[in-house]
Amino acid sequence: KLVCNPGTACTLYVYRHGDRSPVKSYPNDPYQESAWPQGFGQLSQKGMQQHLKLGQNLRQRYQDLLNMTYNRHEIFVRSTDYDRTLMSAEVNLAGMYPPNGSQVFDPNVHWQPIPVHAVPQDKDQLLLFPMSGCPRYEALMNETRKSEVFKNMSSTYKDFLEMVQNKTGLKDANMESVWSVHDTLFCEQMHNMTLPPWVTPDVMEKLGILKDFSFQVMFGVYKSEEKCRLQGGVLLNQITKNISASAVTKNQQLKMIVYSAHDTTVVALQSALKVFSGKQPTYASCHMFELFREDNGSFSVAMFYWNDSSTEPYPLILPGCVQYCPLEEFIRLTKPVIPVDWKQECQVPSGSKDTGNFCHIQHLVHIVESSLWANASLIFIARPFFFLSPSVGLNCQLPKKLLKKIT
Image 1 (cartoon, rainbow, N blue to C red):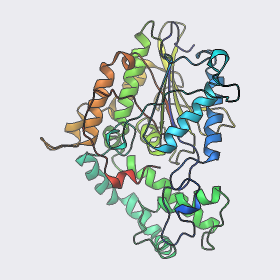
Image 2: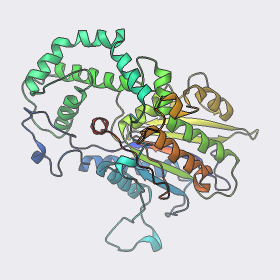
Image 3: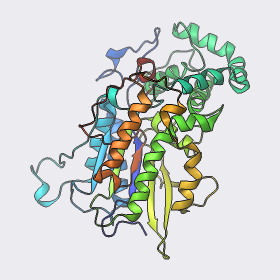
Image 4: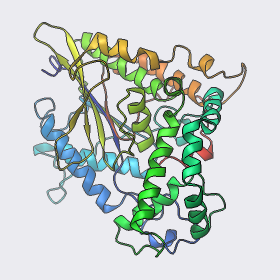
């Protein structure tokens, strides 16, 4: 059964925000920012509905774990500092905790405020991927572009990319930037906008293939394990620490930790776990970790993935283990992608400043030292988030070129 007696945190999930407007348009796009009610990159009403439904599904799944009414001690929610992830978390919580009894402050409002925590984008080095400030990762990406797999894909789609460049008016439509064209067209299609004549089903299919390949390239394709150590492994390291602490902690009220984030967060995490399907996570998709106590007193970890709220989540099995993976085995199998000294492995020059991942590690160390987090396990929503103490005042910057990839 889930380990939540006498109150130990036993579940953690990371989800992606819901349906949104495109993050940008292309030069020849007939639909510029003014065509969208709230502008670019904003949560749509459809996205709100998706997360309301996910919140209701999570309430149903964990009805024996959570109180019927909101209790601030049993759940902690962290979001990246984007409108769409903050709003997704708020709507999700509305589905999970509809007010009852004394929590109804207005009979005409079937909602109650629940805190969602965040840090500024330029200081969030836990949930925004790919993480910055890692020279070795940048070198690996340069090597990836010279790999046979990458060169073969570039050669195969050379003529197609030239066509896309001509039709869109982009100056450089390449293997790593063309995802944004698919993103824009996909959003327009989902909102019943008429696409240009050149956007045929075959074109959308090819753009989708290249879009998915861009996600694979970030954390795989070439020297995947090392990439994961420098990226998603940092997040996975914190998760395993929290899960391990939950297995030994007594009398802790916190039961659930939630991270509201992005598709790149989910991909980084799932790549480190070797369970990434190769496909972009859908809107409001949710990766869940659950800690169980077996009949013999030992502990096991199970992972589930919710990528369609109309169906039940399906199990994700860590390679080399079983669905309910013994905790010790889970830790052993994930150890190869856990960085020992991130700064050293990233080959960060001594004395350098604003090294994103190192700042991220410092935040994680502070989290581990916190009694709140040392006793909790996590639940991640497709673009995750962590609580950072306001006493941690590190000046970390995420380059604009990386922020543009976050969707």
